[in-house]
Structures are given as C-alpha cells and as structure tokens.
Length: 151
Length: 151
DNA sequence: TCCATATAAGTGTATATACACCTTAATTAA
DNA sequence: TTAATTAAGGTGTATATACACTTATATGGA
Image (tube, rainbow over all chains, first blue to last red):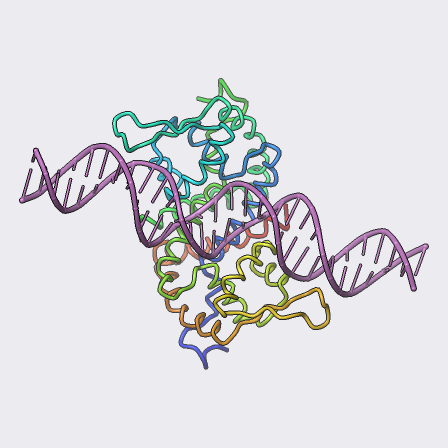
C-alpha cells in the first residue's frame, strides 16, 4: 500500500528490534516491580544492590560497566539508595578522583529480604515463557546488550 | 557459595529476565537514538508517529494499548511531539471525555524523513544479531510484551 | 429521574535514562 | 618541569516511565 508513495516499505516497522525491546521491557519491568513492591525496592534498585552484594565494593565507572548503564544514569540511580542508607559512596584510595560504592548492613538486609519477591517474579516469568524459550531469550538479550560495544 | 548463608541461591540473578531486558534495552535504544539523532526524533517518538501514520488517528487509550505503554506515560510522551507541531490532540466526537491523536502534515513529513535513519539502525542491528536470531528474538520479545495481560 | 458506578483522561510525584558540558586530578609529552 | 591530554566524576536539561489520585463524562439501575 505504501509502495506508491514512499521509497521505503513501512511494513517492516513491527519488526523493529528497539520498539519491541522497549515494549517488552515496559511489560516485564512492571511485572517484577509490582511483585517486588512490598520489599520497598524497584527492579533496577534490586539489580544494583545485588551486583554490589555479589561482587563487593567497586568504583562508579566499573559498576556502570557491569550494569551496561550510562555512568550518569547510575549516578542518579544511586541517590535514592544512598538516601535510604542502603549504600555508601566513599573516596577512592589510590586515585583521588575516583569514588567507591559499597553496601551498608541495611543494604545487605533489604537486598536479602527482597530476594524471595524477585524469585517469585522470576519463577512466574520463566513459567510464562517456558524454560527452553526463557534460556534462549536471556541468551539473546545478553548478546543484544553488547550492541553498544560492537556497533 | 551462598548455600551456607542464604536460603535462596543468588547464582540465578544473572538470568533475571527483567535485568537482562533493561540492559539490552539501554544498549539497543542508544544505538537507534544515535543513528536517528539527525532526524530530530528519538526512537520512542518515531514509534508513536509511525503507529499513527500506519493506523490513522485514534483515542489516547487505544494508542497506549497499541504501544503497550501506560496511558499516563503516553500522555507525557505526546507533549514534546505536540509542541513541535508533529501531532494534534482533538476532542472526541461521540464521547466528550475522549480525545483523539492525529498526525499533522509536519508530523508525516518528519516521520517519513526519519525512515532511512531507522532503516540503517535496523539493518545494522539485524546484521549484528544475524537474520535467524533476529527473527526469533523479536518473536520472543512480542511474547514477553504480553506479560502484563497474562500475569 | 437520580444516584451509583464505570470509563477517559490529566496531574503530582518519583525513579530511570542519557547527552552535553564542567571540574578536578592523573598522566604524558615536550 | 610544565603544558597538553586523558580519565573520574558530577550537573543541567530533557525525555521516558508508572503509580496514586483527581476530574469530568457516560451509563445503568432503582
């Protein structure tokens, strides 16, 4: 139908990777956030605390790389967590420019307490997608997440 | 390693569907946004204009459903597009509560002019993922986007 | 008719995201 | 040793996202 008017065929738009990624992100994030709401943590916040719990204190830039998150985005995302007392940002030792992010005891506690909620959201999600598709899907997402390095 | 201390095994966290979706979304959105920047449209804005271009004017709620976007999110996303004069929001005919969103001529023009940039971003993306994986990936994303209805 | 309920849409608030630009400190070259 | 460059991090601004709440209109039943 567009062949007459336009040089490009619009029929490919529904296959846009970015559009479908954002749609899926909105739907899935809401699912996790709703289930995790009683824990007091959003999904993104839980991710940040969990990476710190697993990998220990690290510099801002390194943490941003871990999360495939823009450094300035991470800076803003750390603020509510810092205000709640879930993490501390302390001066780096060798390099006076750098700062290190580390979990507090309260942070470890809230992360640990949120785990069962995450587990429930994850279980429902994997059950909905199916185990096989779920594995393949996450694997593909990991590849897609390297776009910023490759392209 | 966590088996001793925690009831739940933390080793599953890297497989979190939500975390990996957000990571991929950030990376892929940036890719599209960078390439589309000369067009003056962000990826999300291009999506909205393209749906309107293809499906014609529609009520706010219907458009939100099309985009799998919260209605209030859409309201905010329409504002810059309206200010730029790319779309109009006019009163609904039968129902005085409803309002209809429709593209202006300027909106059609900017959407059309942005198409080649989108096409380049999409081609690079599909080429990076591979045609086969790309198709499967988008198909899985569509399924994941129905999470909000199913769960 | 009139009131209870349901629906369409907007607003207040808070987090999430990232680009452009700035500051400060470390590093490297002349 | 000093000046240019690079690297770590923050700020200004703008869009993106969604929940709780509000307003206005429609609708259905007593």
